[in-house]
Length: 461
Ligand code: LLP
Image 1 (cartoon, rainbow, N blue to C red):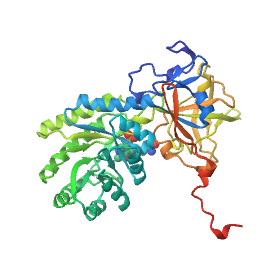
Image 2: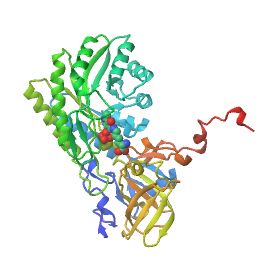
Image 3: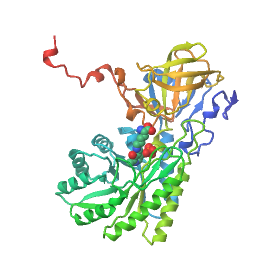
Image 4: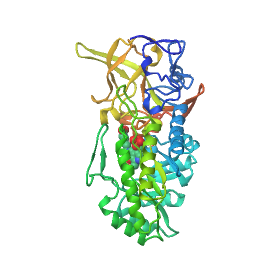
């Protein structure tokens, strides 16, 4: 189907182009600055994708700064608009932790959630204010805990072992902690169930709440418990589970008060989904924030509790849509009457989500944006693994070697879960804005690949 793009370009894939500028990034397939230029090529952030690939190589992650910033602003401003108490949005940096993204989210006033010493170190190096850093993890090492304590980050305590370790480590005053609880709300992508006690490796069992609060209230010289945390899952499209969670957490807040604990922060986790394919229909960031604020405010009012500082920690919905991955098309294999494999120069090493979770993606051909979508093909990666398929049944124009395939929505859990399988180098990443592209992750070289290798003396010739 050929349609006319709003800016007047004949464009076969216009259904992917955002039509409204003030839209919620998580409801779009392409970054918000995506345009088709007069050459029929895709531009993002004012940069022609085919030129970027010539300049920076392939595959290439391309991050649209405007889309990322807008998502940050929508979260931040939503809480300001709908919540009468204090609030803080944290970026769940496991989605993509690197210096540049930490710096952008910090500049937008967000804090950060980190889950390892490495993520913590990166956030600190990027200049994130330690008072806005929260360290998660179900098995933090003593050195990770020590780095968090020394840097002034808040520790989200996950279990008894950690709680007791922190008491041992607290020799220079109380450590700022939150407690992570398992809420008993389990989310799958499109549905959720509530269970009495949930089978999860994360967090304290809510049935242990009395014991945990008692312990914390007996160790106030070591532990300064400022808040409670829970997270129910990821890529969630319904608002109800998060609303239920918020209500449950206000109840916990009331319980904490009975133990004389001055718990003033509630972190309701992350999890808002994004549109990867046309049929995905997540609520907007604004709708999600509004729903949560309303529940917390109503529940606090009913319980006659002062409003807590409200935190949330989205990852995917902040960064996923802002990024696309550009690949170069190479070999094609036609299996008669079955399918056509079109291979690209990356695959499961730069995007492990399809092989890991059977995740679906959409793609366009950056240099053929005005060509009709006449082919149905399978996009294969280049790894020695049959399952290394990025997209099944992709609708594309007729392609040839050298064309640039752009896979959308790759900003979350792609680079952060990338590997060097088959000794492929991890791609470079550029951030684009106003016609300028800046490298923020260098492409790995062959030297990088053997940097950690050691050849024991006796194995040398
Ligand atoms: N907070 C906690 C405690 C989390 O465990 C997570 C994600 C988040 C926040 C952020 O959730 P988000 O807003 O991104 O949904 N690798 C998987 C996703 C794993 C999510 C792990 N936890 C994927 O590629 O789909």
